[in-house]
Length: 397
Picture 1 (cartoon, rainbow, N blue to C red):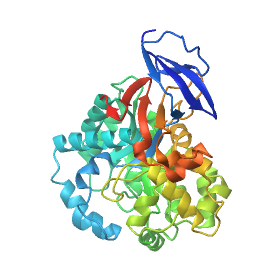
Picture 2: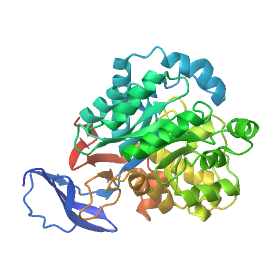
Picture 3: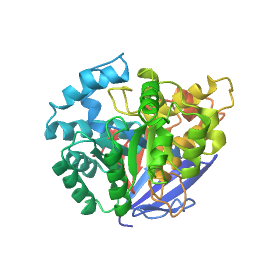
């Protein structure tokens, strides 16, 4: 009975049932309504769904929401974002990360893949708030050798303070900020430690043109020529790709973190949906940071992805169930998290959504309504690792 939750009369897969969580995992999807539990949730009028796994963001950039809008990526980064980030303190990073996590929980997200600095502050925020995260150790050519060595030692000696909710990644920022030596160093230290590699890739046409000029090949082919690409790589954006690039990503087992709202807002371009799906590339969804989105709402991101896919001429491209897969269990799988689906034995990550909302009427199709019609206010309860983080729209962390 200790650390147990009974969710009574909840809608799962078109039928009402009682779900028992014991410890950190789903113990039964067909429990007796009289099962003893430390916590009982009356889920009448609610459905249970997998939560979201945000595979690319910069959490503390909540502090830069609305600071520099409506400009190209290069200008945005060099003239506004990077100078402003130089003024942020460690306490700023902690508070910005907490703000981000609060926003993510309230919109149904229980995991994020981060790339930022002052990582100890983000790790503390994740630990305090009860969610999951993979924290990227950013590596750039501009970092002095002593800092690079410090980050390598951090990776080698890493121990998760939460006992399973936090991982780390080696995160060379991008090919235009991390040269061959830095890229090879990042891949080497990551593979030595058995952790993911997180990088921005082919985000803008300018990045592709510069890479062609410097290396005579696209960013994807350049990284592949270094032996950088593999199933441990999480590549954010991947907007500007040719057919050979896409085939390489599929063959190498790279996971792509697709960020539709950021790509639109920065004018980066439209993701090659049909070609990626046809090639079998592993695709997930991320929000990017709050200064280029400008929110962390994965449900909204999922809808935009599906609609953008259809703008390329095929209304059947990226249907609702595939968009939901990209935003949930595909993201969990990319980071080796045994969750993302509501199933016995899986880690107990879940959301309860309020079917009483007008957005779900008349409920012809729950998944379609969730992807196309709902909004984050429909998220009533959030559970991560068997712990309730929000109930009745009230944060408990």
